Length: 256
Image 1 (cartoon, rainbow, N blue to C red):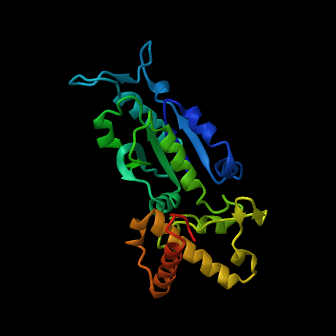
Image 2: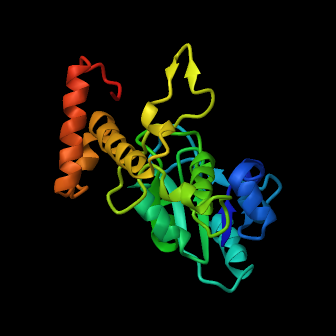
Image 3: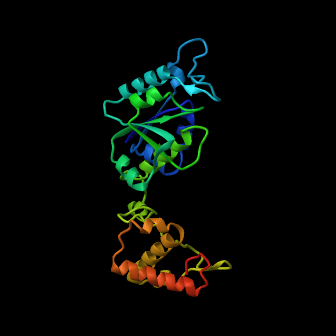
């Protein structure tokens, strides 16, 4: 997959992509990441990329021309078609389902705004989609772009050392439930012991426990996700049993 990022700080994206899963994916040739700075395409002595907004008000707005020329250069760098995605708090929330769709693309171009944003005419003519990573405002789109790069890269075949790791993540699978709790050594600790079922060697029982914990954790933390999960009779029974155990334990908010 190839991702081009248009940003006034392309080195930020490059640094974020130098570690962990994304860094390994680049080393393995699974991801090609290229940064583009609109300032390189600006004209005049000061190479301006922004100006005051019409109508007054605080802040600056990114200019059309440097962005348009920068985008044109990015498009010419590779013949594969690429949707242009603007990282914006006004965009549709990024979900795991949308991430899977984007991860199947051969290429995308990410646009990072700064200041008060980008001239609306550029967005109307050149941007295919706006995506938000949350209901809050950042100083620029670079953090959002870094998140999106990470999300889609880890879904590339071969990006993870264990392919099953992604399949078991929160929001994965057709029902989009939260993940179950995980434990490692030591089995006994002053903060508690690993549940006996995980040390039993009974894989069927472990799978059932994990499924129940996933259902229960989703009910406790993101009950809205259950509304669209389409639980079958078996899942509903597991969840009801979880609720009973939780209530008997005092309803502390922690999984039983």
